[in-house]
Image (cartoon, rainbow, N blue to C red; front, side, top):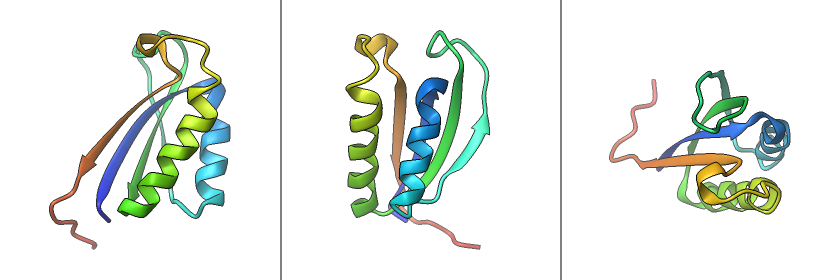
Amino acid sequence: MDKMVFAIIADRFVGDVIDELLEAEISVTEMASTGGFLKEGNTTVVVGVTNSQYEKLKEIFERIVGKNSGRDETHAGAHVFAIDLIKGIHI
């Protein structure tokens, strides 16, 4: 695993994003979340990926959320945070 990704996704996109990640064989953990980060209902997902999977993850987000949000960057349909892992410990 090379990156840990935390994505806060508008509820209207989360089902499609999760379905496509699973179809691409990228495991995802969905967490209930609250707050006004996107100024609407949202869900947080956590994904651990390799660098090659990260490219696929970005493509999925851009295709589903990027073109469909219809909003500016401040009010986008998702906010994605990717953290490079120096050393992952698999237990």
